[in-house]
Image (cartoon, rainbow, N blue to C red; front, side):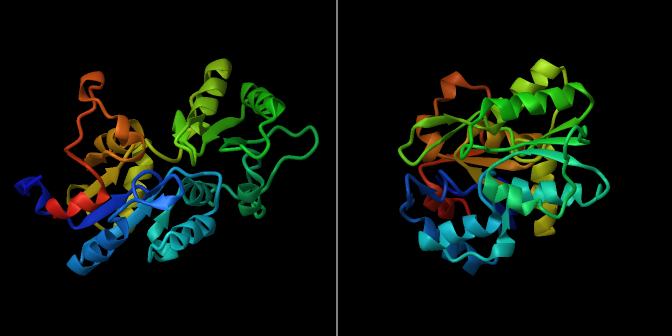
Length: 263
């Protein structure tokens, strides 16, 4: 794909991680070198993800294991966004449906005990303890007035074998529908999440571009926030079919490495 004027003013990139930089337990060919190339151009980089089962430190370790040279302050996750939100409500109590690893991240925030009704119900990835009763307790709290918070809005994700697994967004929507509640979503495709990420780059949205493999989370989220969205045909993007969607990426690339052709 050749350069076009619409991409000449790009000064910052929001780069998806799983499915874009690595997939099925290995770095996608060309991705590591491309990051070095982008750094050399002076473009600002922020690696943002919907991964909500792991802490930002764990995500960083995974990227480093695959050979990526990335700094911790270049990673933005729904957990970071959620903690920033809760820090404004230090007197509020929460009920968590998350992995144990993520629960430890919220030890400094108030949580419910006994028969208390929380102010917030937080639904995240909880694949290490998929007990249905946890969701039922969360549902009861929301019915009784707790605000429903979802770490992200993905319907499903692809595991290490490339197989689909139901994701956080589906559970959040289930509880929202049953309790007739409107959830607040912190990860993709939330417009606020994308704008938070843009803010961390200290650039206006028209100088930032999103690169990702998920049409609904990455590209539609970018569109929601008024940002250009580039789809890569790796990860979920392998199955992209323009005839089956009304979501239109600004460009479609074979892989992350092809971004060199645009910038």
